[in-house]
Image 1 (tube, rainbow, N blue to C red):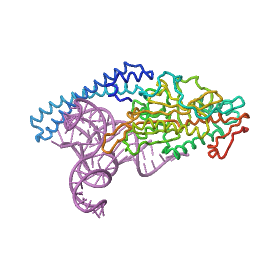
Image 2: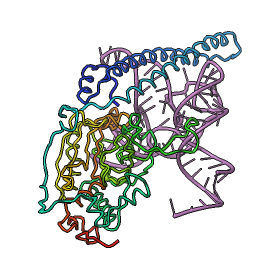
Image 3: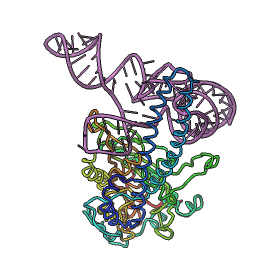
Image 4: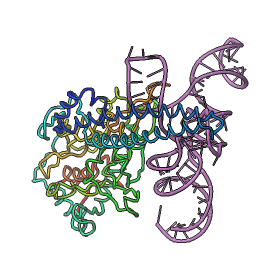
Amino acid sequence: MLDLRLLTDQLQEVTIQLQRRGFHDEALLSEIVRLADQRRQLLTEVEALRARRNEVSSAMASIKDKSSPEFASQRDAMREVGNSIKTLEDQHRKVEQDLSDAALGIPNLPAEDVPDGKTESSNQQIRVVGEKPTMAFQPRDHVDLGAALGVLDVERGARIGGARFTVLHGAGARLERALMNFMVDLHVDQHGYREAWLPVLVKPDALQVTGQLPKFEEDVFKTSTHGSEEEGARPLYLSPTAEVQLTNLHAGEILEPEQLPLGYTAYAPCFRSEAGSYGRDTRGYIRQHQFGKVELVRFCRPEQAQDQLELLTSHAEEVLKRLGLHYRVMLLCAGDTGFSAKKTYDLEVWLPGQDAYREISSCSWMGDFQARRGKIRYRPAPKAKPVLAHTLNGSGLALSRTVVAVLEQYQQEDGSVRIPEALQPYMGGLTEIQATKS
RNA sequence: GGAGGGGUGGCCGAGUGGUCGAAGGCGGCGGUCUUGAAAACCGCUGAGCCCGUAAGGGUUCCGGGGGUUCGAAUCCCUUCCCCUCCGCCA
């Protein structure tokens, strides 16, 4: 959520910044300004009445004879004041609700150094790391490779879960598990993250903090609950990314300055409905309803944020470097930057089987956008007023796509796949995946 | 699932309709004393919102929501969470 004061005081500037990312609902913006103004008026009015009531009430408390005419007349007068207060409170509550509904639909402002542009074609290539592996043969894609090796089983995945579910077998399953441990260990031991093991079902409130709700409900899986929602039963959602759980770790808290910057990492399965992506990436292990991911989340002071984004990105990159995977770093243009983010680097790994770079990590600086929704604050100095923290997150990395990248970049002419050296200890010393009879 | 108990400030804990944002203690900060430290003593010590350049003023918050009342931490309804015992269970 944006700072409403900023929005109302500098509407023009905010509008321009939002237009950069393709947001053009200026009617909504002026509605917010109107509601904010109305809210303030109602509040001033109701608080004046409450002040009066408080004053008279404490005077009434000191009247000893509660049956005196003096007491009775004051009580009658206050009865009307009480009713007015109630009426104004109802109005205020409604305006407050409308205001928050409207404000939750406004995306974050892009950072200044984010390039203009509407689509991914305007993204900027920042750097390229490593080189495309030379192959004196026609590289195969991971679906063919995985099927031939007996490690990737799309058919049986569909049998169990339907489309966009996959079963891994043998060395393939172990590869995913090895990657998970390798990544978490790296971030904990080398990068100083605190490891977490998390709930996967999450409350709507948690999703609202990170920005998936209320606007993108169709993208997440919602579970059914006992009892109707009208009766107050709150449904739980399958978390689409551990960013949700990790960012909410400090919701409602005031952190001490020496705690920052602070980093968490976690492996968690992620679930996405992929509504609206029909027909896209239907082949293989690229876009699944369920996938594993090792997540990185950082909390910091505003003045640390830009550096923290570079640091976080370098942590995700380190995984690719140690695995010897060729990739490039893209700075997303304003139009391609996600709803809650100010600035995002995508890491795109080279997939020779598709002759393309594909996103394998997305590292973002959210500013105070999520912190405002989640009331995540820190105290800049002892006794100072709490200030909203900044949050950052990134995949470090998406496991399924790393499996794909290893299969495709380490494939050999005979269809076997070498295991990156860094991973071999996690694979029980296995150096190569070869076809097995299944 | 059944039966009970409980949610109060950073923490512990009192408070069952009226100057209660809330006793007392702990912790933290500052001071006195001390060569220094400890002890002792004194003072300060929550957050949000509104008005104001500021000083300051107002208001809300005792798990959440609603109600009763002139007035609610206190009474009523509802909901969430935690604990104990029983049952079930990876």
